Amino acid sequence: SEDVMTISTGKYYTATFYVKNTTNKTMTAQAVPSVAPSNAAAHLKKLECFCFEQQELKPGEDALLPVRLLVSDELPENIENIILSYTIFDVTEYDDEAVAQHMHEEHHEMEH
Image (spheres, rainbow, N blue to C red):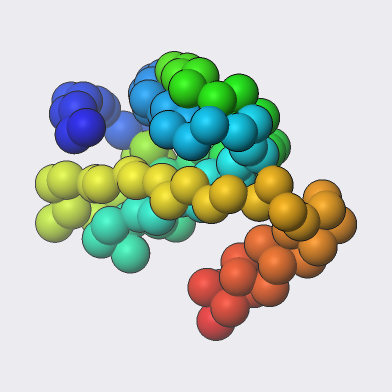
């Protein structure tokens, strides 16, 4: 779903994201954030995020997952809207170390 929040820079906010396991098996999910426009990403600080850890969801289980965030006062004035979205990956078949290595590589590529 697409919920909209009106925020001011320099203040803390909590956004909540809805997730549901639509499969018939327990799954381990890893959320990967995306920020648009990309030049806003450096100004969006996630202080607490469900994306920092894997989430286990039982069959049919749904959850509201919070993100505590702050948008920097240094956000360029020409950026009026920021879109924060998540892609959820089913990482049930992978061990934590392999996922952590993959996430590190993805993050490293995004920094360059």
